[in-house]
Length: 170
Ligand SMILES: CC(C)(COP(=O)(O)OP(=O)(O)OC[C@H]1O[C@@H](n2cnc3c(N)ncnc32)[C@H](O)[C@@H]1OP(=O)(O)O)[C@@H](O)C(=O)NCCC(=O)NCCS
Image (cartoon, rainbow, N blue to C red; front, side):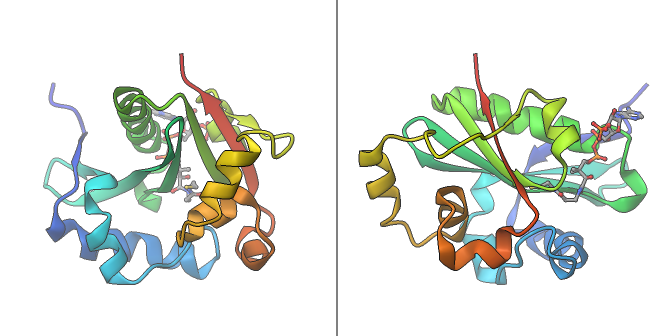
């Protein structure tokens, strides 16, 4: 039997449906809203899930932050497909990619704590995930996700209620 959905690297044509999927979640402040140009610039970070008809039903991205840390971001599945394995399949592909890239820890900022726990993530107890020298280097990044990882005051309104989680890869 053919699988109900497949996961593949994103293409530029996926930006519009990714944005349609993210928009309601961004309106609820579950995900961060980004300009279209930001999606095009980071399209190589994205994997998408599509159903048998080729309709986009999920997306997720892996953003490398440092030699040993990457972030899973913009992980989402269509409401009609929730609870059918799409989010898990996307997350596992992103984690495998992190391993291929040589990253040993993967961060996420989320309301979906139980989902990520089931995938080996733990709630971050403190800021000790990076050395002070790396922290100082990361401060130079213009990326909002990195600022959220560092828990900087200017992004606190975005992170309100979210949980910072991390998974160590084998
Ligand atoms: C988090 C999110 C991506 C999960 O997507 P999903 O497609 O529902 O994920 P799954 O179906 O793989 O797993 C969801 C649940 O269904 C169950 N499930 C998994 N595969 C299943 C299957 N084949 N059949 C039935 N149930 C299944 C799992 O037990 C899981 O339970 P849990 O959430 O309590 O761990 C989705 O809820 C979402 O888009 N949330 C909003 C965006 C967000 O918060 N993203 C995370 C921050 S980046």
